[in-house]
Image (tube, rainbow, N blue to C red; front, side, top):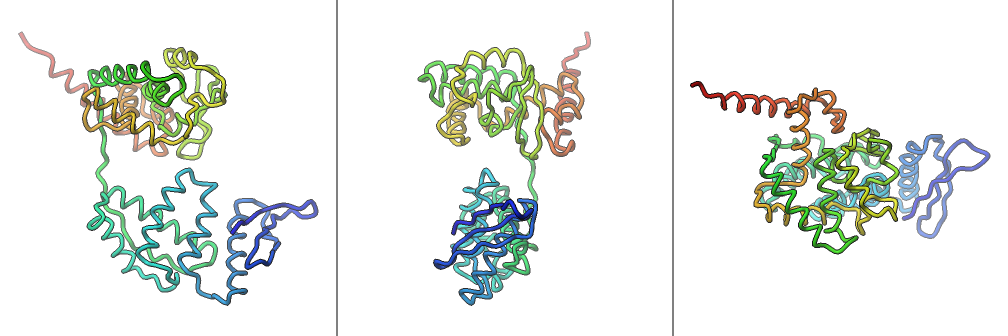
Length: 337
């Protein structure tokens, strides 16, 4: 079902336009803000479906369809979320939302880990998606309760991997060789420049891939949309700027990849790490390397937090810990004569 929002010159409100079983509806949401109108529009659609089809109890497929329409233009990883939801649909079937119980939801979550072998941290992401799904159902009045509200996430132990200088040297050499031998304009060709951007800025991979030439303002990158949803400035190191300016500027993106997704970069990263003989390495660990380098140079945690776009300065505390470890190691190098 296609749901359209529009405005009229004679009204301050948003209107919704949709079809049900060949019948067209145009109704006012009575909302002046578009974000509120989107939620109200979905509620109106569900209400009309109930009137026409005599279905007072909404089903899981009804909810999934409305949720898909809601997030596909708002969430960059909406496809991943829909894949997670498809597993839940497979388990519960075309059930009425009123009939879905907490015990069934808990059983399903237990099976994700035991039978499907999904690790705890990933299961926690699934739980978050399902809670959001049913909270959305409550918001648009498709359900009165959230059967996942009592399902608890597993406790996670944060994973922090910090590269040594020797490892960075090998990774840099392997990344450079890969791009040097690649066809100009290919993903392999751009990989080294993407790698350098991560090393010199500590930016998240998705932020790097979305960089446009317009985002370079003087000596800063302007991150238009960070993980927190806020803009932020990231200083551009002169060496990085010099490297990037060697690239052709014939598209709006600095890295004009065919697909603006991280999967292809992650696959190339694995090959580079293998060639460099660096184990247990993720591309995201370059971000930790950047943070630890700043701490090692004596940069205060507030500044590190602002540059890296941490929502909570507690996240930045890990770099204070690594700096303390470095100081301890430095002390141990002193030998009495």
